[in-house]
Image (cartoon, rainbow, N blue to C red; front, side, top):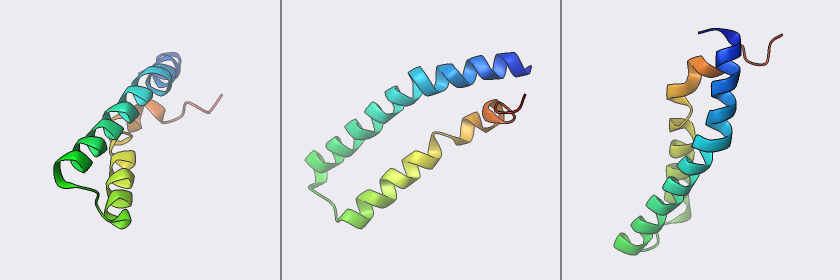
Length: 69
């Protein structure tokens, strides 16, 4: 993929897709709270960290070299 296309895709991912993913992650956590009750803080932290890393894995190739000239 060319650098110009990767830059455009990375902006789209960060401006549109990431906020949608955050809303989905918070909705998932609220559903888990409603279904199973409030989890200990360390479990919630592990879930949020896992979801935070999970979103970036499919887009690793898009973000490579975007900051370079």
